[in-house]
Image (cartoon, rainbow, N blue to C red; front, side, top):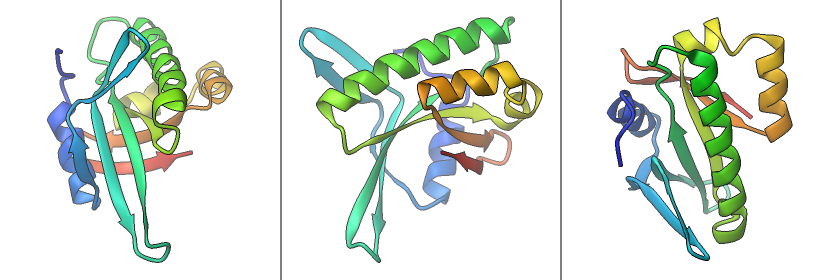
Length: 137
């Protein structure tokens, strides 16, 4: 599996934020269909004495067409969301997006509506500082 340009940056950012990386990649199989989401992570929630588990699909948006990469990201997110609802419904799926692309492209009304329609949860990251900037639920 080819890794996204900022794979290690997002991994470091999640670790800085207190997450334990449990899977790299997070693989699932539903019937005969295999999936590989970039990362699986969990964090102990002391107040609840439980854990929060997430899976993160990392996108760099480094190609020549942002809209084409957006289409691929939405398709992957939707496929992974459905597979996780069958295989691991406790885990929450996030789409990780670089901060500059979030500010430049994802603020458009039509793009926000698309994210709402698929119920996408988003992690906005700064790939230069290896830092999580925002969690959007």
